[in-house]
Length: 326
Image (cartoon, rainbow, N blue to C red; front, side):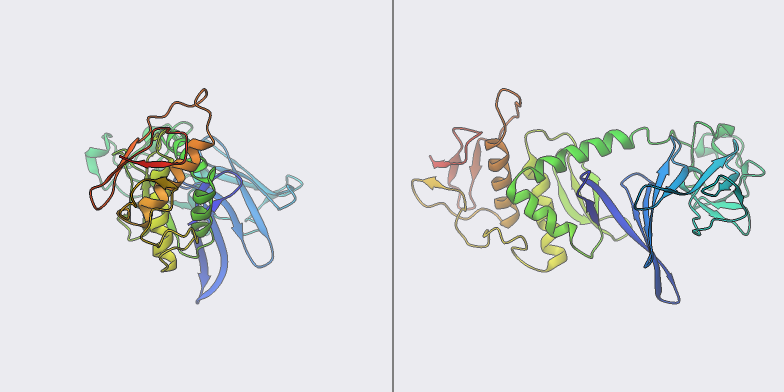
């Protein structure tokens, strides 16, 4: 995974190879088929999309249009040069076009993962693997014959483009911004950002978080999208991911390997917290609360922590940074 520092958005990397030689790197956003840029040894092109997710233009690093695209109602592409003349094929070998799907120019067909789609026929060439569970009596039809409004990224079942994805992405962006607003959170974020290992980020539906592997075997973290009071929850999972990809116990050099609570405290010495990720979580929460005005932000803070030894610590001022023994 790579994280775009400009917009705090999660990106995944895909390599294009020929006989083992790396030809290009593609960077994808969190939304299905959201291609952001293509990087080769000689240049980088950036993708621009319409509301359906179709590629409408490619630009270079200076913002100049390299190539543009138009489509008929069923996705038949027209490729235009910088002077808006029709081209027989893409001059930059771009193959991601209508709704972001891969166009097989030699066959004039689109690859929709489970099926092949013909823009000249306006239908799939195979029956729907879901059969009538796809809620359509016509097993060859593409998106209920409503291609200007609906998409079918997997060749299984139509959906409205980006309907829920935008809200999910916004929630993830906000949560990651809260993490990066703290010194400790930014340090953890940067470790994962610079890693060569792809880490996928998914929204958590339980309100908590976890780190593990998704159904494709990719290292992944699940974080809340609306956890306004717990920016440390996301930091907790990023810490786990950072340790996993680096093989180090304290990859961000936060000094949380020692058995002592890193937060300033008074009273009897505390037992160690459950693990390093939990200590990072509490550090991030403390740093975040201390930088947020209670007048403009009203989280529901965690005011009590229980150490592994059973001793309780309370935070009398949720916006402060000091733990006090009870």
